[in-house]
Length: 346
Image (cartoon, rainbow, N blue to C red):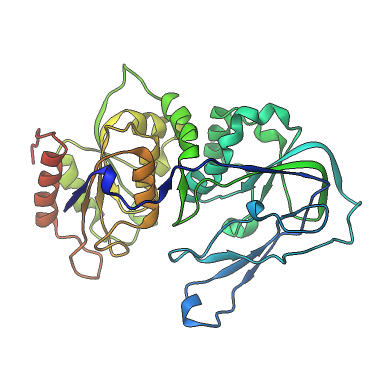
């Protein structure tokens, strides 16, 4: 079990100023997904190629409009030519001031990291008549707005009804492309702090107190740990409320994340929600067979961004996914002592 101060975390978080590119008479190219043909050992984790991005009026690719992928085991890479001039230049033209909101992720974990991180421009949203997104591989490129996505957009004052998906060639009188602030398994810009702070502050309450929460998963949707119910019991014996985030409305989830004192959970998406917690919230990660001895990069980046101190309980059991419950109980007791909270009942 490790406790690492925020100052010793890997430097995913960079103190950088995010930028925008503004193009006159730029255009988008057609979106598509295809399977990746692996040609080397280095590329063995590659799975998919996406095509479709923004070009300037001379046909030069705009790098900010692409998703940077295949870092640290990521499976998807963008593959667009450096130069393109579509034959359908004038067939679909959008007048006025347009904004690219980036790559639309229908996976919750990627949405709260990659997609939200391009919305740092939300304070300027009234300047744009047209809002656009590019699809991704999730849901085979579907971009239907989910309730939690609409809720996040509403908090940032972004009118979801104005968002349109770029699937074919479209030219723009003027389009602004903000830089993505969170690169999967890579750099995270300090410039995106304001997004998560705004969301967190909208859910802080002096009348609501959540002491300890354990973010769990139902067996039907989580197969990396086979004795989940036993793990939950250990946390319940230590005064944790066990919750299943996917079963709660997003507003209720965010109230819990913003007000809890200790946030615990298995490795994975649920624990990334620490980005919506207060800096003094203590985070405990229970590793599984995917993250046996170290945190995955996205979780490290989330903790660095949130400023939380944390404890990590390595997975050192058998490879069938069964956690040693006695050992977990011992390590959890150590974690709570490190957090400064010693009110242990189990």
